[in-house]
Amino acid sequence: MPTARHLILRWFCAVGVTLGALGPLPLAHAAPVPTAPAQAQTRDALAAYEAGSFDVALRGFASAAQQGNRLAQFNYAMMLLRGEGTPARPQEALVWLKKAADNQMTHAQFTWGDLYERGELVPKSLVEANRWYERAAQGGHVQAQMALATNYFTGRGVPRDYGKAFEWYSRAASAGDGGAQYIVGSFYEHGEPGVVDKDVEQAKIWYARSAAHGDPGALAKLRSLLEESVRARTGSAM
Image (cartoon, rainbow, N blue to C red):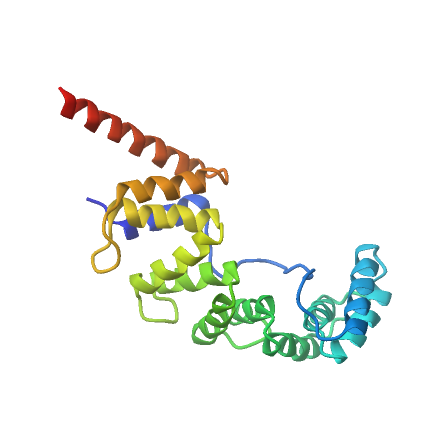
């Protein structure tokens, strides 16, 4: 009988999940800020960026970043990295990205994890990647929770630990991630010794939540479990 981990690995293959292949990260649009002037500058810089005025946006983000605004620090880093409004300055970009991450911006922390996982601009290190993912995950960053869970599940840069994988998948699922909801449903459908007991009713709940996000595999799983329940009730009534 297949276990939860076997079915989850099948799901990874079916949906084309690849680790460390997230592509360019967008500018961030919301984060707490320390001062009103920096907040206003950041807001104006975002408007300029979206209007295509990269030089104006770059100056605005730079000014607000120097005042400690973590959203501006992250966006300034991204513009420096991409060469928007300026020739690309990747090493300077890393300085500002680190400032944003140390300023408790979870998306910056997640970005550091992704850079270390891919070995882009920094030496490849799954250990460092997971350290940054965990910081972001603890702060509620769902992509980081998924990345950390998957690395625990597969043993990438950390000892394989299905219990920790399930914990982080569950947190991402509770936050509304459809892929995590499917995986949590798989754990409950089949059980995992020492991690979670088999609970088909919980599996139905999580598959239903994943199906609501448009996952056809989750919908198929839900239908199959519902049909099994009907057959079981019909058989016991005969």
